[in-house]
Image 1 (cartoon, helix red, strand yellow):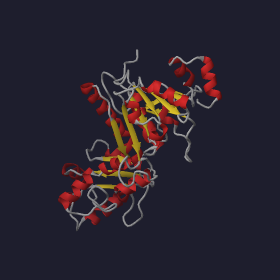
Image 2 (spheres, helix red, strand yellow; image 1 turned 135 degrees about the horizontal axis):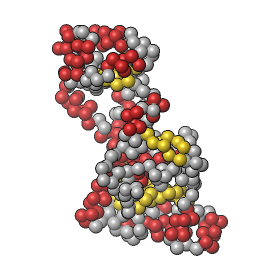
Image 3 (cartoon, one colour; image 1 turned 90 degrees about the vertical axis):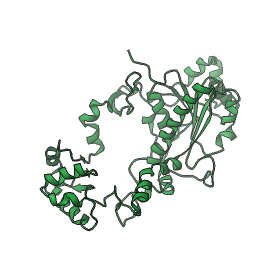
Image 4 (cartoon, helix red, strand yellow; image 1 turned 45 degrees about the vertical axis):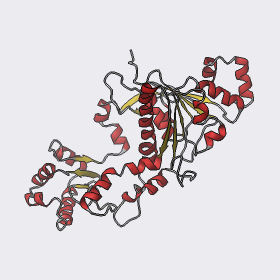
Length: 382
């Protein structure tokens, strides 16, 4: 028997599109919340529709620009716990489904807006994507090679960490607060705010050392040999993260260079030590290094591709890669649930629904007749 999730009994209406909002509601759905994704049409970017974040959810088509569509939404919102939206500031107000309008009929509603620059401030109406939010927040300036242009990371850091995860945290805080007060509240999540908050350690190190934060040339980014990446004989890479002296000592002793132990952060010797390790690591393949460095307590890791990571026994044992049957019956590999709860574990239960797959069932649940459902379909309400 499947255990109940921590959020079983919580209902989420998700009006968001693309990645930040759906990623947030996926987290909630993974832990048992009933999430109903609502769209009037399939939003597909130039990169295609990201259906992976729709697992464990239901999907409903609903045109909020029509009065019957808004009426249906309000009848759902009256019983919901959470509403999530990712439009530009002001859009939900124009549609008539903003926080104040919903809270008037459901004071306990928790309403979360995720936007690029937040609901206030001089950038609130600016369009943007992940790369822009990383740029404005100062994060992008830290990616890439020294004295080269910034490099765009291959994952959506602002969308997921800056937006989706902070939204999930805010929603959980608001749920706890509602338990104490009985009242819901409004949550304003800015992906740019969230990105800036990721610079906490960077700012602390700058203040502590007095050194400027330069791309690929800072305490934890390539400046020293102990925290760097190295190429192997087969043109693969590995990472060294021997920040603490005991790990650095183990590495130096392995390479029989005890004279480097005390020079870990010596700026006069740093390039010499980096060049030494570059030469050493270039002499053997990554597979050989995996065998030789295993268990030596050095803080190192092989740089794996996505395909290699998906086949790693580590992630299989920790259920971070799980098999799931798609709606067509095909077995596919999907990413698992990273938050491990002992009594109310999250789970990947159902595949992403087809567009509008649950519309009719949800309307019938609301007491709408077959005749009325047909009229809604003919009139573009659903």
